[in-house]
Image (cartoon, rainbow, N blue to C red; front, side):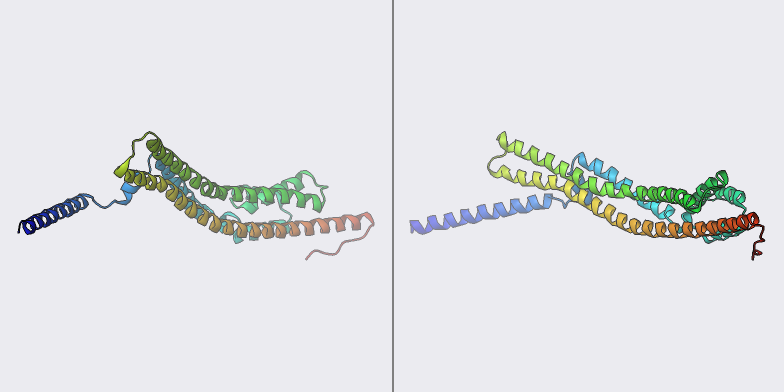
Length: 263
């Protein structure tokens, strides 16, 4: 009889302790509010400030490239028609002045070539072509250089994020080495580790976005460079035709012959 009473009391006490622990656990869970995105980012520490700057810079570059990397900044039908008409009239000085007023990249190429031609009347077609190709390469390099900043951000962001993770891991292991984390406090180590990994995740996200837009704009730049080369080759062909006609007339005058009438 006495044993039955003790067993009943032990069962009631065990039930009370278990119920109390469950209630305490539920209260602790209720006190924990779900982490928001801002809270998670704040856990990353001061490295997140550097990553935020990189993300803002990426946004500015992408917006700027969408506004400025257009076909109209490379070559336009209006300029090509005007340049072709002036070349056929041999109005090279007028075309140089017209190029000064235009913003297309092909205008810079035509201006360099015609400047060289007017200052060196005896220049050959090959020399003029070399001058135009040099200027065309310079303009194409400027286009490529502009979008390379996105590639730089894509390479730097993961490194900055990894730096934040390494710093966080160092702090966590320093706590272990100093004996500040023992027993149940080892759970704090796991919290320190995932907080450290936030910076790597943020750096990878920024890198993926930057490299994606870099690939897109690189394709656009390559297409524009191809159009610039085609437009420059067309104008050089017209200038070369005019030079050939001039040489034909000079040779005919030298031998006392009359050149055919120009059409």
